[in-house]
Amino acid sequence: MDHPEAVGQRPKVTAIIPAGNEAGQIEAAVGSVLWADEVLVVVDAASTDGTLDRVRALKDPRIRAESHPYGYSAAQKNWAIPRATHPWVFLLDADERCTEPLRDEILALLSGEPDKDAYWIRRENLFFGRIMKHGGWQTDRVIRLFRRECRYQDRRVHAEIEGWTTAGALRCPLQHSTFRGWAHYLAKLDQYTTWGAEQDFKDGKGAGAINVVLRPAFRFIKQYLIRLGFLDGIPGAIAVYLAVYGVFLKYAKLWDMGRRKRMVPRDAGAGNP
Image (cartoon, rainbow, N blue to C red; front, side, top):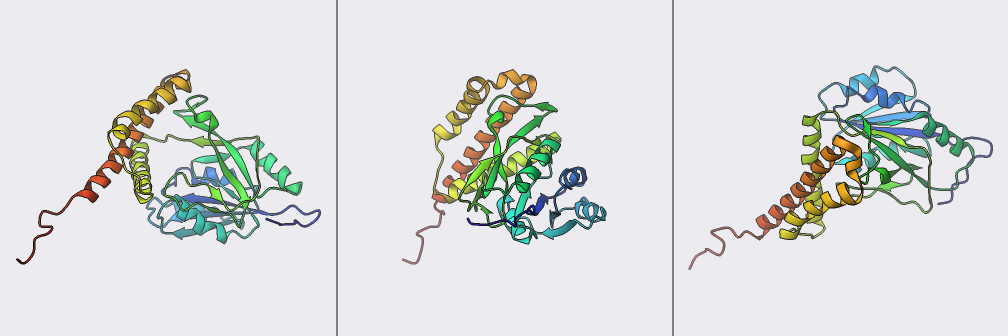
């Protein structure tokens, strides 16, 4: 991409926050990005807890609130990105916070005429109030600062920004709170494993005994032992068992999708003699 910025003028940025039933934390999320020139909060139209009303009640001219039906994460974000007013987008989930060091790094980067189209940002994950430093959590990074022309891959899960030519990396992390309660976490796990199975099924993949039986066991060995998840104490143990369950659930659902596809109706082939 060739995007010469105006000399001596910092390019402006829109912070986008997708949200659904996030009334309890949307104000804190918005508050962490009020350094942006515009804050666009896109609320799932099915939200019932007053998230949209809370955003509109903030009465800040920089904040826009829009409602849109939610299909899946990438689709919602791709709907929102073209609605950004400014040439740069900083995307933040409602359970994430832009820390002050990250804010300062972004503003310094933009003031210095950035030469990349997108920037990877490391996530500092909190689980039961503990910063997770092992088990693979420490390598978690996402593209969250990018030019408005970029879009997310059209995938139900694990979609990342594409459409960039060059990408850099920022030093300071986002803060990500991954657990707000058991009911919410398990419901989210169920939804994401369904989406993961549906995406694999769409891609022509299937699941057999190796996937259903051995993949969960390998996930335990990899996350808890090889990647030293046990060093994160009880939160590390809880995290790995939930991850193992998630792997099992995804492949069990994928196996079931394949089974149902292969099933032949009992009256198949029946017809007039």
